[in-house]
Length: 326
Ligand code: ATP
Ligand code: LTN
Image 1 (tube, helix red, strand yellow):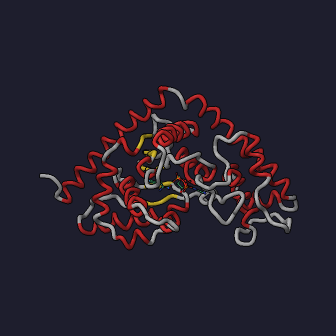
Image 2: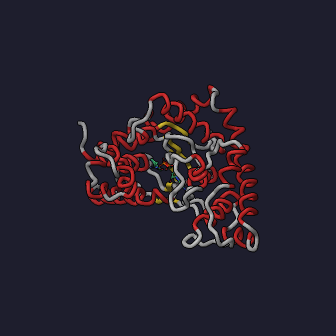
Image 3: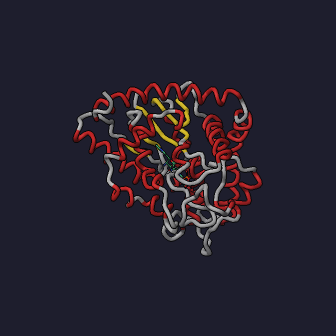
């Protein structure tokens, strides 16, 4: 069976962009892959976090993993900082990556832009991500489109090390959804939907109440020509709504557009509200049952043990390869 690894940062409310771009695939993949899903708290602290909030967000993401249908009997769920190999391999990979490669990353430029002093962790963020992936001999990495560049860098580092020391790492591949890979902000369809955006109606969180879902969709930015068709260049707002509908319903976006042809924006929005509310209802219900259960922490402890055993094998190989220790 091929091995899958992915991670989500515990930095705020998980939104439908995270879900439709990444998390939804996590569930499907566990049927015929060996899956490892991480809560990447060490990535979260590349930007300042309130310690108490960070701990709460870790458990929030863990509960959401279970609530959407990740089954801890089939998949490993764990917290990054519970397995020391991530930081250790991160260092080894830093020594095999160039600062030029890192300063060219789009996410680094976006997150460091306008700041007076920039934390080193923000620059080396993609190296830690490469360590996450390579630590588990990962074949497949399901992520949203915004992570494409980071996956490419991870592959470059793996190939570079393998060139010098044959067969050290498995070279992984990214896996991106057709619909959902890039969900845009509802109030500004030129920007990606993001956890950190100020405007609350820019996103729909997985735990939003029905009323909030309705409000956010009904006030989503469209355009003034009134025609429903899928054309992300000319009609980014309408196309984003069609894309979200497609990702929730599983219908091709062309079929969704055909279904709404000749109808008004109000019809599209109303039907989308219903589809989103229906999809999120069971997730919210499951989440409430799981979030404060003792079982949640037990799942994370068990996951850390299982992940740690795999990681330790890789780290032994890496230490031997590089001549670390004696
Ligand atoms: P922020 O928005 O604060 O930068 P984030 O939402 O990108 O954070 P992550 O936890 O790092 O947060 O992302 C988890 C997963 O969700 C990743 O696979 C990422 O590619 C995916 N993702 C994030 N935003 C979107 C989006 N708008 N559309 C599709 N996928 C997304
Ligand atoms: N950078 C990713 C989160 C992440 C990740 C990973 C994803 C950290 N390590 C390993 C896949 C594999 C993001 O979504 N912002």
